[in-house]
Length: 201
Image (cartoon, helix red, strand yellow):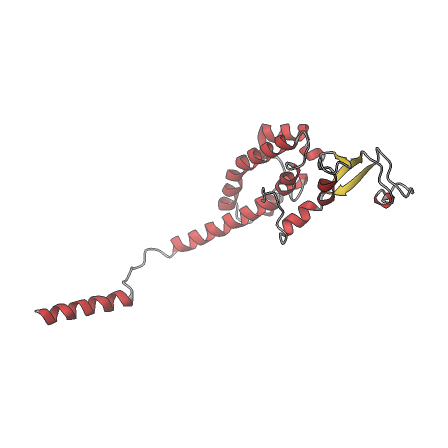
């Protein structure tokens, strides 16, 4: 998950996350961009028109410098859903919230919006609460698809890493206690030392 100020240019997750659409209400008239509103036949966009725009476009249009649109936060990040996550994040099916729940939420927390700070806090809290459960599933539930279907992309990546690490540990433990032998270089070094000592004696 990228909480930095810039997106990862070659990250597939970032590309998908920034393609998520946001309802944007235009606060100034915009000429010759009426085609952005599929429900309108006008050439221009009038004040008050609401259009869904991808995050990468919306975030530049709602900055203090630009201030062309007012962004509405998607419902899964609004207060009602944040309260559900605060109550018990572990029972929530995050995949239904969105495949890139954390990644997109991190981007929303950077917007100049009254809920941005709260969104960031809830994301961190949710991740902390669910991390232990994801690792527990990775170590004990095998590759049960019913488990991974409830996870977003970040949690699925953690699940795969945890499962793979557990499999490697089990494989190492199953080999049993083998005999540890000195490296050939160390043995040769000892022989040379003994030969030098013999010369002095």
